[in-house]
Image 1: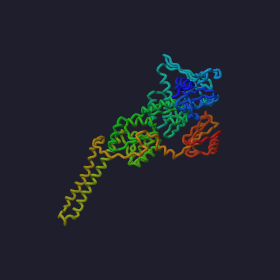
Image 2: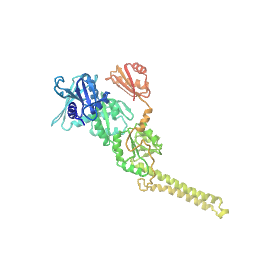
Image 3: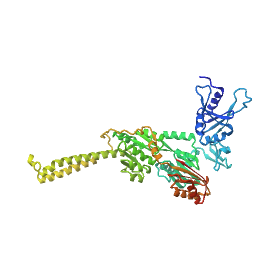
Image 4: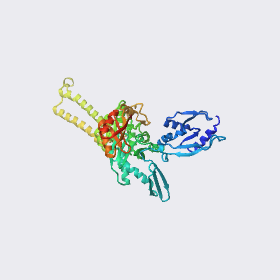
Length: 561
């Protein structure tokens, strides 16, 4: 292989000192990026990816931006959570005798932006500094837009809890209006810390995605990563940390406040102590076990692997669960076990729906069987009992038919000409009573049946799952098809004239009534209203409805979601 060019050697040396940043390498009138940096920048900034001969076997991937207009490109990368290192020419290329000297003059991060054009107008832009001492920690933050400065301190050992308590306080207020099982975990965590939970107003839930509400003077949102990305950028470090938590079987929940990331709370979806044993018993009966969850694929994979299920389908919305059940029914009978509101459609669609006794009333009403002790092992026990009951019924029917085949012709005298057999009435009555006694006694044997004893389970040939159901977690495979059948439209309206929360509520009510909108959200500070509808709204009608409510519409934008 040919030797690297001097400039590429220089680039690689500087890049090795800034591996966590996208390196803007000044070459003449351009800032150029190479290798992985070039690929990332090309994807994020819609730049053309080219190549450069640098002495390697293959051309190095390359893209670039003009140095005189680099600020807009840097701003876009920073908004997406990237660090950008600026490598400038530190000597005049015209006077340089050899390779132009270059060095890093600045590293720009989301927390160090001070340039006016990189700051979003109409919102606060904070810079913070933290000082750690033996006695505690000092925190100072200033608003780069207004110059307002704040200073506080925390005793040693308490600063982490102080920050987490603030996140937990807003998260608990938001989740207090939800009936999702994960909400109970956050509320229990907040209760253990103590403190007063603020009131949430204008609460709205987006099924399978997240929640939004007004808390104090803030618009607070919580949910999965895709939902929060619609509100604010997620730094790569945050998503990587969340992925690591998901690999541990924890569900990361993201929270934002006024379209700024507030934090992430990981909720451990702890597997029930008897879950693994119960699944082993079900598989021993010849049943296929599929884990169906709205959690992300990483979390689902970790829990599914520990439980020993045959397949995992993750990231499924409530209506998507029903679609999965419908596909599974093509391969055989399906029993669905659930406990929440989101499980109700799937419980109804399944051949047999089993609801956990500690679950929601909606799930219990939709199910055919209710597991009163709420243990996972009761699922195998219920199946074991149903099989025993069915076997008992077949035994009783067999003996009843044998008795009637012999007894009725005997009582009617059919056998007298052939065998000379006769039946006295008193013996006929005795035989009838004995038949009933045998049937009832055989049925009463079920009282002695041991529900949780698996040694007598009869293994049956398991069904073959459809191809899309594998041991690897499927990220809404079948649910995606269903979602695509229902295209939803997100409409963003620029509204002027909203002065307070009552104005926001007034606009929300008008939009919701006119367009059957899901969870309309208005923000008077941002002069914006957003809503989701099943049908694409007419821009003229949107303008008419909001202006009829007493406000001015500047722009209307609609996109599919």
